Length: 456
Image 1 (cartoon, rainbow, N blue to C red):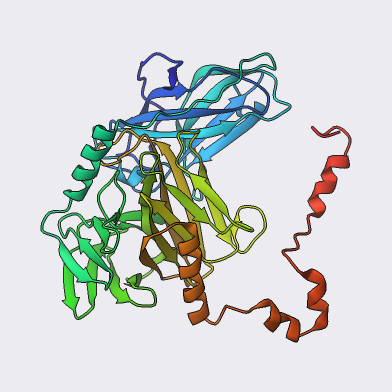
Image 2: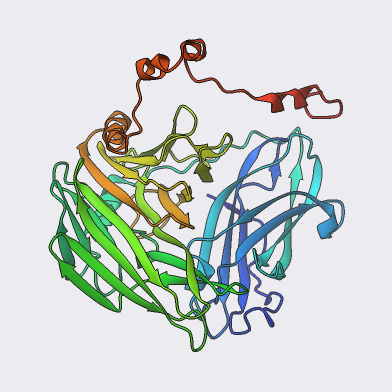
């Protein structure tokens, strides 16, 4: 459990006037899993905000977290974090209280002493203005602090099963699309969906935290806004495809139509999700997140995500400190080396794949206490797509694990012409034989020889 370090007083935060006058968030709660940690130690932080305004935010705002020393001043930031909350601020309705996190935070190795905790929101990517900011509590970094390794125990079997049953009943009168070894179901009243694996009986679905398909980002070159995709304005079925139509209003007098196509694919069986948008005047869609906090796995499911970061990593829902990680295309640190992610729960696997490198993969861990999350530690997947990126595919694979995910992606990669064996590469030049394996050159490690660093 997180330890409460501040009283539940709720003074209203700084005004959003000039940014978003009808959106007035107030910080109501801040919790740290400990208020004393060792250098380099990790801890969890959780927030709660209440929207005291007349409407949700017009834009997605970011939470900032500063640890300042010795005085309360942004010029004294010693370490910090930025968090884009799920659900996003465009979904914080009037009068609603929204809990955000927990997030894992790591104190630097050389961070000693007492820190003021400074928290608030800021208009990331636009004005940069901070608002709803407060100082709440303190954190001490002390080499003599006890080892801190908080974990969440799994739910009871009965509670986890009750939540699974609730999740299976959340769609009302769904529209169905046959996907071969799977069936896609969409609730036309909310935009929430599920993909049922006919071989394993497992359900894979949209976010268990909020209704809807996802969200899109729109811009007129000067202003940028985010709009959720919930209940579609129109729905059309034709053969092996569904089309959802949304009429979005980024500003007064402006309207943009977004069409989301859902289509059966084969090899392996699954669903293709894509979108098109018609610009209206200066306003156009600049990005979309049509997979948002979806494909959730939990510790009660024995769940994990398989991410092709370098040679591959497994992110497990095991009750440990939750982390949110971002993977961009084909880089070194913090990147994916192949365009897919795998999800595994209850011995059943699913592959999500995409083609365009303007796709960012986000994995979010949460110590969840939500009625549709059958576990106490959940991992979910989001795909943020910009520029030319317009879609992805989902392939339920039946019973299996990360090996079956890799085998399925190989089939997808072969169809795209990306599979080349070592023999194929060696035939193009004998020098290739000298690089057998996965070479990874890291000149940045020489920083460890620099005087005054934590290593020297």
